[in-house]
Amino acid sequence: MKTIHIVLLAALAIFVAALAINFSESASIYTDFGTARTSGREVHIVGEWVNREGAGYDPSSDLFTFDLKDTLQQVQRVHYFDPKPINFEQAEKVVIIGAYDKKQDVFVADKIIMKCPSKYEATSITENSKQ
Image (cartoon, rainbow, N blue to C red; front, side):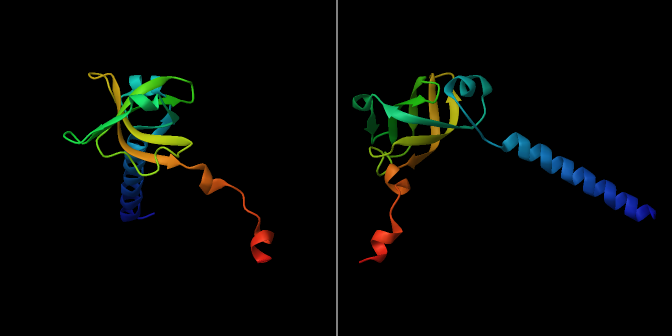
C-alpha cells in the first residue's frame, strides 16, 4: 500500500472518530425530571400538563409557565419563553425539549411538541369510500 493511501485512511479514521464524538455529545435524550436535574444536558421529557389553574403567561417577559408531570409521576415547574402554543389545552401528552435550571429550580423548555389524540384516531376507509 502506498504511503498516500495510508495517510488518507488515517485522516478518514480521525474524521469519523471526531464526528462520532461530536454527535454523541450533542445528541438529546428522552428522560425524566430527576435525570434532567443531574445531567445538565439538553433532554426531551414526555409528560402531561397538570395544575392547569396555576399556568400563566406574562407578556412583559414573554414567559409561559406551567406544571408538567413526567412518566415517573414527578411534577416540575416549566418555563417557556414564548407564548402558549396553539392547542396546548387539547394535547393529551406534551414533549418538552430543554434543560434544567438549578438556580431557579425550574425546567426551561426551548421547544414544546404537542401529542394530540385527534391526529391518531383510527378512521374507517370503507366508510369514506361508500359516500
